[in-house]
Amino acid sequence: MPRTLANNTKTTPQECTSRRGLIKTIVYGIPLLIGGTLAASIGNYLFGKQRAAPKDSWADAADISDMRVGEPCRLQFERAVVDGWNVRSKASSAWIILDNERRVTAFSPQCTHLGCAYHWQADKKLFTCPCHGSAFNVRGDVVAGPATRPLDRYATKLEGTRLWLGPVQKS
Image (cartoon, rainbow, N blue to C red; front, side):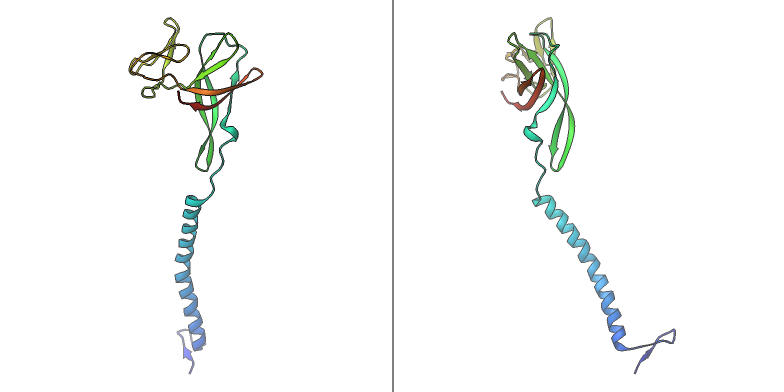
């Protein structure tokens, strides 16, 4: 016998079952959909392919045609940095020295003792670190400790008068 609802409409048992089934599907389906989306996102994060580093990780640093031989120059440049899937531009610096044969040496700006930023003292002709007193000559060799190893250097290449800096090479 058909049931009568509050608004005096008659429904069959099949209609009640199908509505109940629809509500169950919705109640159980939404959390499953959310959980599946989260699981897929986590799986992509953990096992997905990362972006490749920019080609060779070289940065176009500067035009060196105006540099003076034997006089260190602090150089600011932009470098592409890969952080997981994010590629961004980062400000970097280097100390550049041009020798008599037009060869370029580029030093990393951190002291090899504890990573403090050092500076050039023209009157002493030394790179000096204000943190603990380490000193380095124009070739990057240790003159006074506590640093025990020479300054780290960037890989360099010249294309005409343009200086390109590669990754830092530990000394």
